Length: 210
Length: 333
Image 1 (tube, helix red, strand yellow):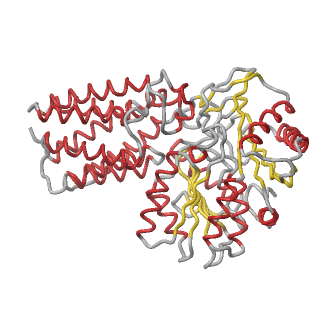
Image 2: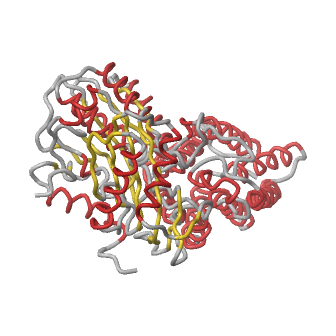
């Protein structure tokens, strides 16, 4: 199964709509240890990304560039550069490609994860979005090696992202504002990791409809 | 939630428009942007002084823009650092070939976006210099100062470095002066009552009626780590000063500037009482208060509470502190 530029557009429009639907849920998660506006920021960014995606009449790579720019510019804060970097890396890794198969998607996610970790100076176990993204990327690689199809690969990746997001409950925050809470951040799920899990789940749900 | 708002999407815009209207002799808003600049521009050749921050903390720092203070404030969304492309746009706007000093408060979003904008600006040939500010003793232990948040002590560097640059100080000396002020500054804050996010309407922090929280950050991040019963002003002044004095440490016969900042809803009456008690306690420890400032200059909506910042000063800092300036927080009428 290979995704065309039309599939990619529909896929990320669905992701954007799903993120926007979760606005108040993400705010509630953030309000426990943050200032309670993660959902507002995500919604602002994904509205812009959706618009940029629909207005861009280009290649897959150009669509990712437009989304990355929309996310980075409209979110601000720490999350803006993180999502901006992720999608700009997707754009770079898919240059010249007319369709994306599991191998291409796995590779762009792997590179995206590396770039985000470098840009934000963050690693696994620090109670951030990486704790959902990293296990999802590992899962995609495993699925590729085992010759699974795209739908199965994303179903597994979404499950791993969700497990990863849930694992942040037992972590002490070491990045962002939550780190000032030290051990008081224990027992709460990270809002950024939850966002990432929602995105992976939305991707999986959409791919099932193809 | 009872807040004077039209619509959430226009909140930051409306804030910047209104504030610049009310202070139109000092600042103006660059059209279709979140950039607040001085009305009376600094001469070409002199170093320009720029700071970016999230909205929701007014009058920080739009009210700190003006002659002898900042040349520009680039503002993000509510409690959100401006994006790197907005910071880059700001640097390009203010660039006249002279060096630019970009001050960054140590918060994850501010640092990430400033670093990206800094790299892009250098590539475009802009002579930008980046300095990082941290002063909050509650956010990381001594010895890990670089991990600490930037808080109210930014008033000292804005005033002192701002005065230095107004008179034509060069960029290398400005960076050293900034670092000198930073390394002589410490801040500690206490929150009394809750505040709400102006867009979500959710409580950012809630506190029991009789308790206060020591070490609260500017976004209410504290989480109950250090709650104590409400104190008399004198007792709280001693508690806060002891933390600050021990941390630097400030020594007998040191001369300091004091900045008592209201976090939003604490009255000038209370701030004045607290200012007196802080000064008296410092003097009782033989730490001499050279001068100070007391107002709500860096707020978090209607959060009740105070932050106390001290800065040890030498003759150079004293002279620059006394230099004239004009900005929203200083010139109320």
